[in-house]
Each structure stands twice: as structure tokens, then as C-alpha cells.
Length: 363
Image (tube, rainbow, N blue to C red):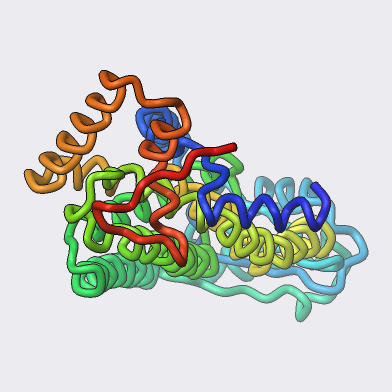
């Protein structure tokens, strides 16, 4: 799409001249989200996350300055020196190899350190050994869990106060948690190691997801001011207009955020093999993409589904639909029915929002 065409498309979405029935098809989106959520749960249950040594504890060896980064060398060395320990081997940069095994005693650590240096043709001083106890791993896990819980609770309270509508807060939090669930499922499916950097990435996802949803909800609130004082459009229709109005912004923000993250993921994960860059960039890339999508196809439709359960909103929706059915019975032309169904003309600047507003006939 040309630049002018994209700008015109965005302008048409904002003014309501063009509209996509996103809210009206919410059952389809809910079904798709449910399918992805179940698939993510199954992957997490049967395959699980590949937890790093920071969470499970163990011994870690890093070989630096080697010209040969063949991982099979480390696997064979571990099998020979400490049989019974299953190693996790990754390349670190262009000249490094990281080997992680379960906890070793001092003699086993020294023996494996010397053997790795000999196998890779480097001095023993180039092989560093670190031990991370299970207590530290449990501590890191609990801090990550409590950090996530604190963020979710604070976000829920803030949104409930800001929008003065607890249903919006519930919809945003549910969508945000599903963002993390699907992102974790993708991470488990790929099989990359979960490190503290990954947790930082997931917490960043929550922030981005919340921001994107607040922008859309803010537009929903703006469009639904004095909703029950008019009979031209329902809450669902005004929410659908809000989603269409913020669609271009969501696309632009997501693309701008994804491009540098994709660059970091490619360089860190496939060129340099840098563990930290790879771990955080994958979680960010998947999370940003999922978060932007859920803001459009899940959060607002879920808010509408919850709000339509309110007696006040339900009564207003029935009133609007009954009046619209009366127009059909009276033989109103298609342009009047289309304008009444969209409810968009009264929401753009310069149009009246009261009862007297009448849809203009299209020529």
C-alpha cells in the first residue's frame, strides 16, 4: 500500500468511512485465542520450559578463547569425566562454549575443568567454573513470581481507578495474562533456555501490553461518553469504532518496536550466539507481537462482552436495536440503516451527538 493510500486508509478508519467488524466477530477471536491458549498449556505441560541453571541450580563451565566451538566435544568430555550427568551445552559468542550440568563436588569440578581445557585446546585458566545452589534458584523463581503478581495487581487497581470501570480492568488483565501464556508456550516450543533475562523480557511484555490496551480503552471511553443519552449506536458499535480508530496506531507502534528487537534477535541469537541477547530478544519479539494482536482482537471484545452484561448497557442496546428494527419495518433506505448501524458520523469532530442527529443520505 502506497504511503498516501495508507494515510487515507487510516483517515477512513478514524472517521468511520471504513470499518472492520472486529467486535461483531468476537466469538471467532475468542475461539482462536482459546485454541492458542490450550495449545500453549499443552506445550508447557508435556514439553515444559527449559529452565536455566539460575532456576534449577548446578555447575556451569565457560570455555573462552577456543577456535573450535563444537558442542559434541563438551558432551563427550562430560560423559567421560562425570558419567551420569546430562550436560546442557550452548555456544557463547564466536569463541566460547558454555557447559551446564547438575551439581558437582570439588573434585569433579576440578577434573571436568581440566578435561574441558584439554579437549578444546586452551589453558585451564580459560575455563571458568561457577556453582549455583538450588536455594539461589528458588529465590530467583520466587522473586520473579512475586514481581509478576505485584505488577498485575498494581495494573488492575490503576486501570480500575483510571477508567472507573472494573470490567475494563478485568478485560485488560485477562488479555495481558494470556499474552504471557501464549508467549511462554512459544518459548517452550522453541526450547530456548529460560534465564533471568527471559523473565525481564516477559515483565517488559506486560508493560507494553498494558500500554497498548490502555490506548484502545481510552478511545473506547471517549467514544462512549453520554452513551445512553442517544439511540443511534450501541456500546459494541462505539467500541468497534474505537478499535478501528486506533488500528493504525497499534500497527505502527508494533512495527517500530518489533524491528529493533528482530535485529537484536538475529544478531544475538544467530550470529553471535550471545545468550543474554538471545534470551531477552525472543521473549520481547513474541510478546510484543502477541500483545499488539490481543489489544485489538481480545481485550476490547472481552470488555464489550462483560459490559453488555450490565443492566444499563443491555437495556440501551435493546432500545437501539428495537428502534432500528422499527426503521426496517417502516422501509428506511439502506444508507440510513448503514449510518444508524455504524454510529460513526456522530463521533467525529463537528457532528452532533444528541437525539436530533440524523444520518445524511449518501449521493
